Image (cartoon, rainbow, N blue to C red; front, side):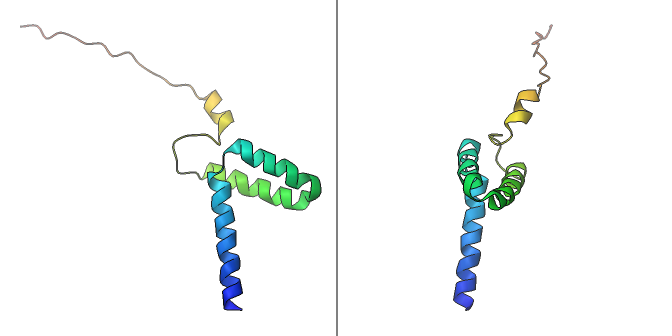
Length: 85
């Protein structure tokens, strides 16, 4: 019984990591296929993928495509001033 419970937890953890590190285009394809047959499971997966993307620790911003298009960078030019003697 303990072995079965441990294996179940490991499978859930592995699934969560796959959702966290999977590109959003692949996630959307999986969500579409699962949503056709099992809409309740697709709703739970959708909430899990939103949580995965928002808590991502990488700096690629691949999951937040809407946020990156709206971001503006305030860049200031670098002006070199020659030292007067």
